[in-house]
Image (cartoon, rainbow, N blue to C red; front, top):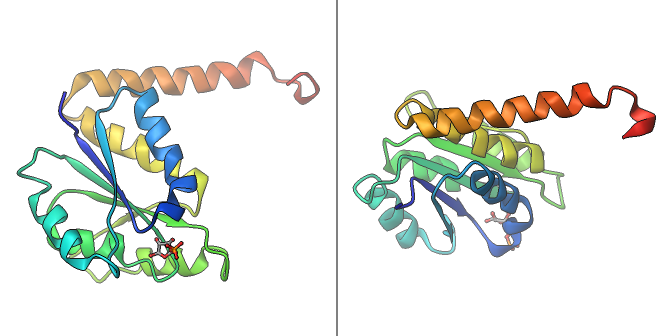
Length: 163
Ligand code: RP5
């Protein structure tokens, strides 16, 4: 099946965080592609990738970046696909810079912004699966199963000393 989610990030150094997005998409059986596309270092590639994303059949973009994290916002400026932004935890400012760069979009160009780091990376994947589930029932089913498993894991071991 051709990729439905485009997972892009500003640098190979973002992979430590964004690998959790890819893992989660894999776990739920969602076809996706992964690519380094930098808003600052490869702006032309960013324009090309995002302007072709919809016609190539992608349905959701997930963009992760750190520091002056312009990638998700610029991606959203170039496509009408839903764009989910993952703030990568930066060394200098712990990811607060990334979060604020991604979340404070002007009205009219939204980026669905997730939490800083691994939690945001996992949740971006789950949110993408939720969006895809509106059109593809197999992904809605996979999401229900994931949630049920998560619930069962907590209920099966209520005593933290036994985990
Ligand atoms: C951003 O700058 C990237 O998203 C990355 O989080 C950060 C640092 O990039 P590198 O210097 O590690 O390539 O564009």
